[in-house]
Image (cartoon, rainbow, N blue to C red):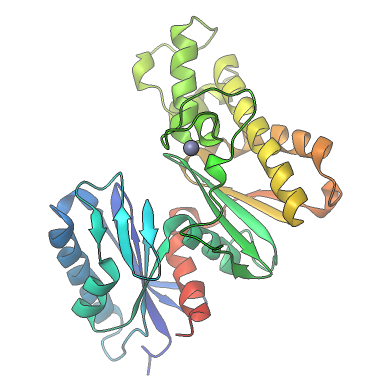
Amino acid sequence: MPGEDTFLALDIGGTNVKSGLITRAGEILAFDSFPTSEGKGPEALAALIAAKLKALWNGASPSGRPRALAIGAPGWIRRREGIVVMAPNIPGWKDVPITRLMSQALDIPAVLENDANLYALGEWLSGAGRGCANEITLTLGTGVGGGLILEGRLWNGSFTSAAEIGHIPLGGVSRVCGCGRTGCLETVASAIGMAAIAREWIAAGRETLYEGDPRLIDTLAMLDLAARGDPMSLSVFKGAGEAIGFVLSGVFNLLSLELAVIGGGGSGAFDFMAPSVLEVMSRHLVTASMDQIRVAKGALGGNAPLVGAAALLTEAGY
Ligand SMILES: [Zn+2]
């Protein structure tokens, strides 16, 4: 039966909802994506997602039945109950029993996981972290998502979500984080945080090649500027790299990891940040020598969470 060893994967983001039919090895057999704004409100969006998943499954594998569905969601989730408690970037999403809605609509089991954790599982299964037992992933986007793999398994910890690396505090940083605290890593290293620093520096008259409206600068524009030698953009990326380096030094020293994978939209600046990350780690790492560890750019891009669904469902026994 062609469908026997396939899974459905869903990645609900603030901008797009991505879905895939995947094999146990993480190969994506069929893929679909649509703007999250197409579904008005949680019920309408859930119904739309279910219809898209059914179409994906029927189109690619008419004779078989996927074994289960893995759902990746941003924000605050209750994994065991399958509830998205709050997704700040998806209007109206509060206490949505997404697992029940999906398994009822599709008549297959469904499992919920944090999207950053699915990203980690994807890179571990068939991306930059393939074959690594102990690794952490960082996704530089609106915030900095984290996923931790220890001894080849996703680490969930005791409470709702482990590996909140974006909210590890940095000494000497007073920037206010989306979580309401100050000095979190993501205030300087997320794509949004880096662009915010650039805006402030432009307003303060710092030397830059940027000539557009300061309010519109983003990390994509900064990448282009950095490639042309722009001192402002290069400084922002260097600062982000140093902050990541300090945090990773602590995490690696605590857990004796061998790899950090950096992905998400902000990882376009990986080549500009990596030298600073490694320089700081070379001064603070005690659990390994620098030639034993790696800091790598994510290899799977935005589809990593869909790939990770295969590892999550295999681990869950499906
Ligand atoms: Zn925070």
